[in-house]
Image (cartoon, rainbow, N blue to C red; front, side, top):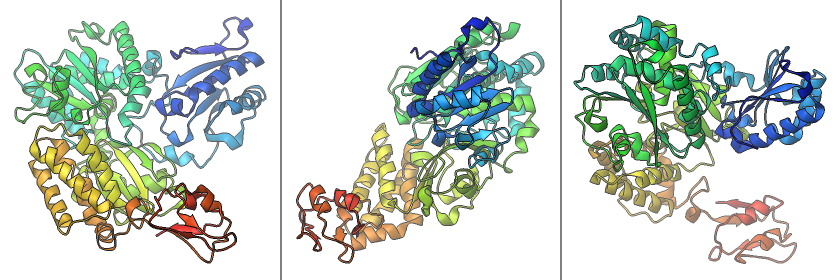
Length: 608
């Protein structure tokens, strides 16, 4: 089947052009596709044709309930119902029961008009501005975006609002950049507009590379026109006539839908010469990045667009005065731009009424890790971490015990249980040693080793260092070496003190934001989980059982039945014992693979 999905009508083709009485809408974002959405689509095509049911097959993006993919919406005159975790084997019953017999299958419903389920709160407790259309419209059909009021904000500013007033609206709204440090968006626009130059640019930073982050990807896949409209309004405000979207090549579906959206916008007159028959002209190009994390830094991103190696440079001059090809350039990320049209349409005061005094509006988080309901969450600034993790996302997987949350991506910080009631805003998070970042949120339970987690994130940032400045290039490498020694039980006497000192030096001496924030996971785990470092160093143990070289497998005498199952699964013959007698593990031979504990039918083996 062709992967270029268009709206399709299936079944009952002999009924002429009669409009289908039902719609079947399948989530075809990256998460849905990974869960098997294409197979579900094919199964519906075949089943509808087989039963001669007239229904319209449509696609949509990710609504955020990633833990329930594949998601299928069935829309009939009675209302809209969403089924979760749909497989091809479930399709026949959905068609026969729901579409033919008009009896929804209640056990499979995750969301629906008139139905209360365990998933209802996931969306009901959110406040969706950026994600307002994701999972609701077909991202490849511009008419569906227009039906939501799309491009009305652009028309309003082009016909009624001078550029300076547009900037004033954004300043009054309190919108801050959603890509990192939270610089006020209106001020950035103002600086770029006032900068001297015969040519100016708008750049959308879609170089989302944080482990566990997929906020920008989902917006681009689910509602690309909202980003284009935001870029157009920004371009009008600062006096630019050209824009670039710098997007990771690892996001092929996002790139595809952006290309479709740009083509459609041109056809409708929203892009190109004399936009909407006004003096304003603006066009957008896509630049696919090669996947370097450092290109999320704006000067490295600019270098990459220009065809040079993506490496940051000293600032000033800032991009607002000397950016792309030396011209004034305004760089905003996907989420920031996706807020713009909503603010123009609803008013600055409406946006400013959401959030806290200094952090206005909402923020999207990609919540992953040891949480029951992983997915996309958009909440007002000032919402407590506890509300996101336990209220919206249902708490810890398998009813485990919460240990920490890594917030702000690999450059963020690890916060403990005692900080669960802290509010999500720029100032509060910065005070803890973490950062807002782009919005990655990785939840850890008691099975997570915080020393190893810090090592994992530092390994990522060290690999992604461009190598231009010595503090980042060598400092992160030496920090990683120390963390690796600690997780292997080979610590030197001065490692812990030197680790903290070096982390602080790297933070203040590095050239760009990557190096300046890379030590955050180390510093916050030292601050809040210092006892775990002590156990690793002084006792040569990893209580979480993650650091392999600090783990010992032991057989409990009172539980071992001598069945021999562990012996059969040990790949190095490290276990001995007569049948029906207590067995023993030879630590000198044990490679700590864990197969014995995994296969023991009596739970007689544990890690110590």
